[in-house]
Image (tube, rainbow, N blue to C red; front, side, top):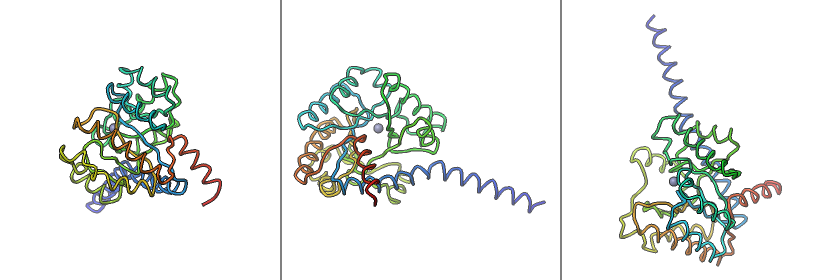
Length: 275
Ligand SMILES: [Zn+2]
């Protein structure tokens, strides 16, 4: 009797362990595999995709759009549904200027911190908000890069593709540089609850982004930037400075700037040509 109880307990323990592992672990594996493929395409085709999260934000998104216009760059904007509702004219301008629009949920909930249903619902609402505006949403980026099996499957069922980034610009006041989501980053995230926070005085020091620029001008990649509200006011200027630096440095090395839609087309051409 004791043996059968123990067996049942072990069975339950294994099932719960596997479920939790799949819930949080599978998206991490997908992210890692996807990033390696993107890194290869970007390096071989000399491509960089600039992406801006957390907008649209009055007073900031316009500045980003003006700068992109000046630099003649098209980018991808991961917008938050409830901000879109308040700032429809900004969304119109993003599209009018020829940029690509993608979803970043409805309320920017971190699905690792809210219940599974709330996380999935936030994703679904965000996509619905944009599709109500007749936007063909192809891409979704989970807030803070945290996804679960629930959001991954919902994304797939809604015909969207989840995408992260290969390079974090650090324009939110956190550590910047290449972000391949290795084991050390996962451990740091789980145990210490986040990335290294940079003191406000240091945020705009050019040397803080030297690693990022060096990596991008050789490797290319998908860059995470922000046009939303920020923890430091100086981070808003940092976004603009960082964008300008990335473009100037990468163009010297003949890199091209693309939207995620164009990056996907590059990926398809590359797979047609073989490995
Ligand atoms: Zn975000």
